[in-house]
Image (cartoon, rainbow, N blue to C red; front, top):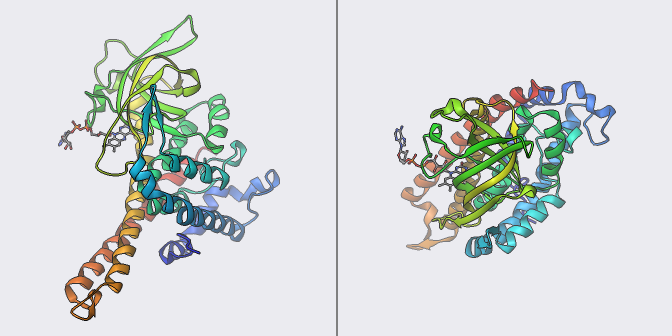
Length: 365
Ligand SMILES: Cc1cc2nc3c(=O)[nH]c(=O)nc-3n(C[C@H](O)[C@H](O)[C@H](O)COP(=O)(O)OP(=O)(O)OC[C@H]3O[C@@H](n4cnc5c(N)ncnc54)[C@H](O)[C@@H]3O)c2cc1C
């Protein structure tokens, strides 16, 4: 049976890299979790065995559920019903398979219900999901927004939201607006503190929000009246259970149709401040974008791997002039260039996922 992990020697090669010892050391901190959690590893070999098990489960789900569903998801796409985004039916099946496989909140500490996986391994999972369906990977990998909430939210917020993400609730990052794209300093969505409600109220519009009808949103909004630049922006947590945000449009994109790109209207939506006011863009969104960049890098590598596999298979099967076309220099030259570029990108992804994120998060524990 196909498996995107055991069929991919590249993933296994990197997992055997000596640097993994240091990554495990940073992540498991003398393996103290073993005294509290039954499934926590007792040593390096045990941790690696755990990683391989999660990778194998993901390899199975991606190859045998998500990939076979991908064509139907792409053809059906999400749709809008009374201000709510409804996923393609097979997307719901994919989400359910990931929940049953325990593939949510994977990077979070065990005390919140997570698997405490290092970002290197998270990235590998992300790659496999993208190989199976790049659109679904957008939805799945947005679970990394929880890293920012974990890093900058308070303990009460962590206790409230992280277990929900570990149980399968989805996330989104609501930054872009009609007049604020690359220039996020221009964000205008307004946050006003309401003494009456004892919370912040959000009003305005967000555009191009991936998985915009998610359960838990991180929202960039202007909390400081009269300001015009990034120093007046703060980050908020919006919980869909509170109501106040509707989807008014889903973009018709060229590809990744299964990934809903939404326009949202906020009308007195109740929200909680995450961290301190004024640091929304200059500190928290910068951290959030680090996860998002790694997510997109993993998506590109996963997609590239699958495209290469398909091209190689086709070039080995297709015959012209009584020869397999892979035997023509012009074709094998293209394939070898693809392979070289893919390995370079994979190597860059592994290096950044090993060095950028893990120590940053571990400093908190
Ligand atoms: C599929 C998809 C999913 C998305 N998901 C999300 C999401 O989940 N959350 C979210 O908040 N946003 C999301 N976005 C929005 C995305 O972040 C913005 O599209 C992006 O920031 C660019 O903004 P813009 O589209 O308004 O383009 P603009 O900022 O208007 O840019 C237009 C063009 O001008 C160029 N340009 C702009 N400024 C400069 C400059 N200083 N120097 C040189 N060139 C410049 C740009 O490169 C671009 O070619 C998504 C977008 C897409 C297409």
